[in-house]
Image 1: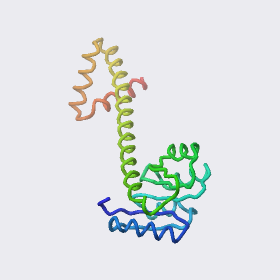
Image 2 (image 1 turned 60 degrees about the horizontal axis):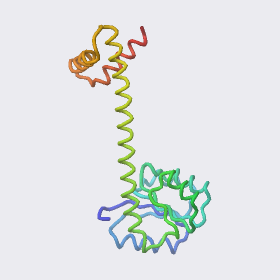
Image 3 (image 1 turned 90 degrees about the horizontal axis):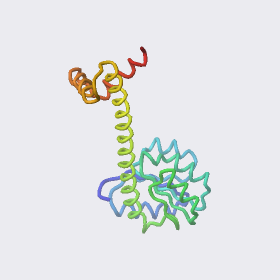
Image 4 (image 1 turned 180 degrees about the vertical axis):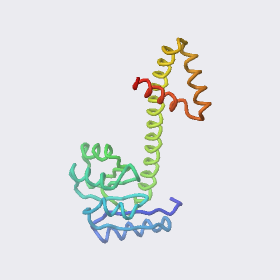
Length: 193
């Protein structure tokens, strides 16, 4: 960690929180805030808007994990969840909720830096994967619309697929629009007729 991070630690034990803050400050000049309770977590996180959230939960239940992960917005920032015991169902729930790091045996000051580094790296990896998936879905939807528009042009003009695509492409170029936008307009207009 070389960049200054805004870190929110959710830890009920004051001494443990102080130890963790001290170990984080040894790694750099970070903006660190500590919440002593899990109540109003969503509101506190929204107000603080940290770069990363570290949550220590001694003995979590499935509901607690779901509540904490939803409150900490794991799709917006890395979230590291520290628990005292291992449980396959809880681990699965946490990971499915978007937690970047699920660490068994609690939050200890000597492990904080490597866990933060791993959580940030994993968060960015999943963020890239989500972006790529969305781009792929958009491209597929555009492709479907373009194919429908080609079919409309082929029937209306009596041309083959290549000529239909060339007409749509030329119209898009003439209008300074994307091919998918022209295709969508054509499909929408044909549905009205």
